[in-house]
Length: 451
Ligand SMILES: [Mg+2]
Image 1 (cartoon, helix red, strand yellow):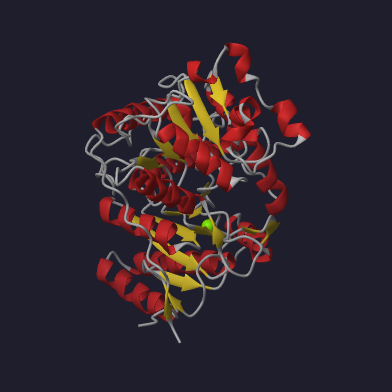
Image 2 (tube, protein in one colour):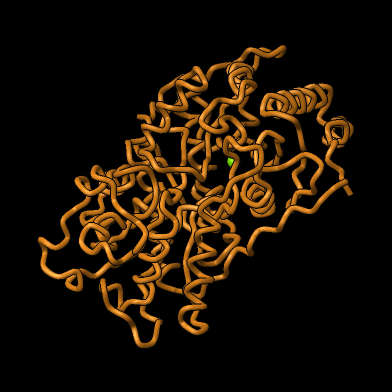
């Protein structure tokens, strides 16, 4: 029997104009960097509004330079220029650190091992993080048995890079050991403090959390600067999933309740918190366990809810990057075009007519793709797989245009759909004929019409 999945928390509407401003700055900078040596004929001044007005920021793969774009490359005649794929990673290609077997085959199919001999451009768009983009691409390359370039990769915390010159002293939360501190420093943040640094200075901050010897050794000595109360946190960034929810929550709340971010202080009004940024808002993600595990979105909810209860009803406004924000998909569109030009010699001014987005989480992947489709001139086609968060037999909170078992089925479906469209088009210029050809195909592969 179909059970309802819990709907996602609403995408917040934020009235914070300073955030909107910083979002615009970040976006302009990212676009500029992304353009590299190539002009940006596709940047549309009237590009569609984001799904949320405030809690959106656009990511790019930029901590390592984008793959050098070679505008002079000749177009490969076997490469499809009318469509492309974009993939979520966890629950689609990888699960619990291991590759989903069909993913390797799916990549081969995209690279031309299919009955049509067509090669299809593709990019990766994940909310995950916790490592540098280059490191993550290295992992993915080994797992998928093909080279994944940072020029085709966007992850959850990438946009935080653009805030490095805006905030001096920042608290960076999440990830393994010191990794996220290093990612943040690689992004250009000059004074990165972690919860470990604070615990090293004052173990009483979190009564039940004891730093290991390694953690103690790796943590900065904040007391060498004077008192903890001499330090002001300008912003809090949750880069990756917390490994120590209780102590991280305590430290984040202390900062949210402080006088303007000054450590060890308490605001009298609880309305002077520094800004909080989360690299995404996924409540659940697909790990090794048979049921989805709690993710950063859950921590975000807990921070907000607990703040409200300990301050007698004050609200803490936090922001999240990543999917399902439309701006993230808009950025992915531009990345995809640059990638198509660089890798395949396809004309960068012409976006693909259809982008198939393959994901496992209705609340971020499908919701975002469908919203992007509404906002965009080209067709963003959502495909839900059953290898991750979405559980077969349940009703997804956001409806995909197609549901399939695995990423391989998704790739085969998209390619077949496109080749049918090509055939119909070459038979005559009648668009109606093309649509008629596609309709039964879409309907045939639509098993999730769980009413
Ligand atoms: Mg996923």
